[in-house]
Image (cartoon, helix red, strand yellow):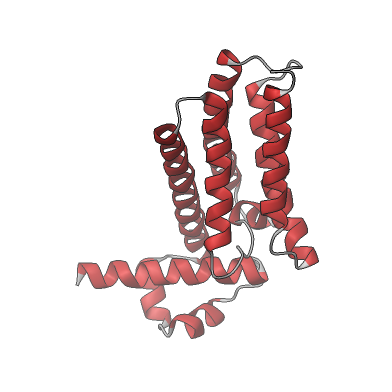
Length: 205
């Protein structure tokens, strides 16, 4: 019974995430969610006291899954190379390969969706988004800091600013790619960032 309850809760959260990315938080009604899951209002309120509580669960689920992916790619890159530049480049390629392997391109980013509708949420949600983005950025920053320490760039750069650059690029590519209907924009921009790093750390060597 406990496992069945967990499955029901997971189904509600996963379906809500898909609907929020498609229609926005304000545009997702509980009736639509229940139709999509085939559940009753009683089942919903057994797991969540409100739509706002469901939104918090969606945010946490998305953040944990996203960070786990990036941490796994980081660890895999470390296993595949001892060279700090190659580790960063492999890390980025693993991200691109993941996107290429998806049956459909990502519908968007929960962080971005919630930020666009910030008036719908209490301040604690925005604090959570900042913290989760910072954790995601920290994975990049650690790798870039190790690279800079061992292989000085041709022009001065800070690991934190480079990490901000790729995170901003990814978030922006989600938005622009969806507006254009361009399923490959994010991969192309990640490749451009790889090229920039190769020029920054390899020119003249």
